[in-house]
Amino acid sequence: MSDDRGGAAGPLPEELARQLDDDAEVVDEIVLPPAVPQVAGGRSEARERAVHLLYESRMKARPGGETVADQVAAPDAYAVDLVRGVEQHRTEIDEVIGRLARGWTIERMPSLDLEVLRVACFELAHRPDVPTGVVLSEAVDLATRYGTDDSSRFVNGLLAAAARELRPEG
Image (cartoon, rainbow, N blue to C red):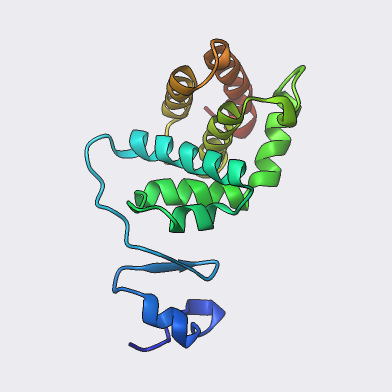
């Protein structure tokens, strides 16, 4: 196998190039296996998986790319896109969340609520192809299923304010 799959960053080290299958991908020098074909549930399940991957990364204090690479079943491509997007824009996203969360600091927020908010804010800011109502509805659903008794109200209120700021046209 040729080692010219490194793209703009240059050729991959030979040992890394040997690890690649035809459909594998390299992110931050970590080989990601090919994504499992998307099945029923689509983006809803991908959002849920992204929240779980981000939560796992946070609990293990490691980059999301490493967590994604360690999965036995490769995440859906959209879940990987969400994890990457949240990590690339974390400072911007956390600034929005921190500013809009009245009476809360990011450090005090329940971890799953925070990851749900991060995924939703990433979609609001960087995925104009996803309707605002879908982003809010999916986030509230995840907060209801995985958060505290107050999570859904907290997530809904904060994201409504974030949507007004991040998508003022809608």
